[in-house]
Image 1 (cartoon, rainbow, N blue to C red):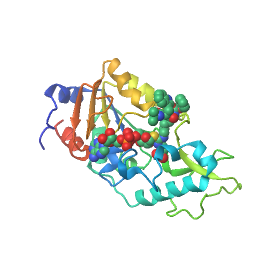
Image 2 (cartoon, rainbow, N blue to C red):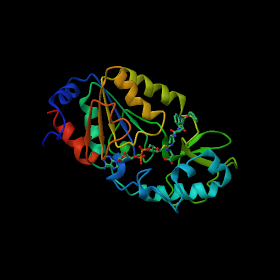
Image 3 (cartoon, rainbow, N blue to C red):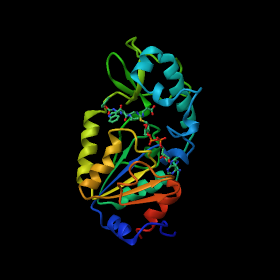
Image 4 (cartoon, helix red, strand yellow):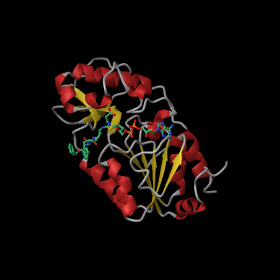
Length: 246
Ligand code: BV8
């Protein structure tokens, strides 16, 4: 398999020698599995902007509407399979002395694709949380039996997902920051790099002297920061990158 065009031997050598590899992914890594990206045209639903629905305010105002959106997304995601980008990241994990995947995606496809050492920064669409008790359970009902789904305690369940304006799980954020501080190679794949705090991770890694490689279909706000950008489909470029390690 050819080395990805535009990738220098220096970058490949740095990845080969890396002691600690971190991969940060966004919706673009799941695009080739058929999951609509967050900001792509197909991401819109009933003409709502996802950023307006993925908020505690929207849920408090109309939990039924927000749950209908998530029920639609769960139905869309349930039959989908990991694509070669997910599989390449799982393969890279096996080859790296120390590895962590930090994903912004909530679709669960990285786990389905074999990733083990991973953090779901924004939660997982298959987990629900009781708004009263706070306990988290898995719910794979497609479609949901009730909208909104209720806890056995009588309170409402919400998606166990981090919405805009909500803080990330402090433990997950701390583990992510520790990995970003310690890594010597960071791959940033399939993210528009606009959502904080994950959009700052590549800058933090670069400032610390890690080699940062971006994989995206198009330039992003971090393209000027990273050591190198590979423009193309993650499902094609990531397998080529892993294969080029020999
Ligand atoms: C927080 C769950 C403390 C919901 C999501 C500092 C500065 C400015 C703003 C803020 C800041 N700190 C906090 C904020 C506010 C906010 C924020 O970042 N707003 C942005 C929009 C400006 N952040 C937060 O609220 C975060 N909380 O920081 O807490 C706090 C709180 C309040 C105020 C201050 C501090 C919580 C953010 C989490 C939001 N939840 N998801 C759900 O999914 O239902 S984020 C959502 O966006 C998704 O998880 C998604 O993964 C994520 C990022 O989007 P991308 O993954 O990048 O997807 P996108 O569609 O944008 O781009 C896809 C990319 O892939 C594109 O570049 C495309 O070119 C590329 N692509 C497409 N196909 C392919 C491909 N690449 C390769 N191959 C392909 N085939």
